[in-house]
Length: 58
Image (cartoon, rainbow, N blue to C red):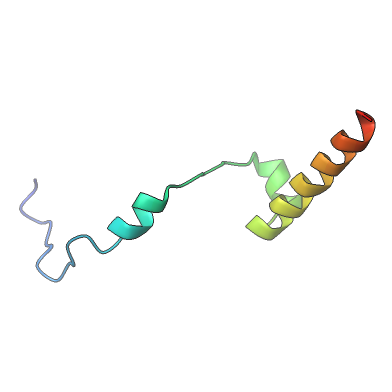
């Protein structure tokens, strides 16, 4: 580790509990980020997609 790294004020395990819960990171292409600026917009679009998919298979 480089000498200029200073972790003296850090907290060990600060995010350990969150890490245990797991993550699901998805990277959007730049042109999609304009239409889906946040996680709520993406989740709503995916919910609508799933509903359309369900109704098309009936």
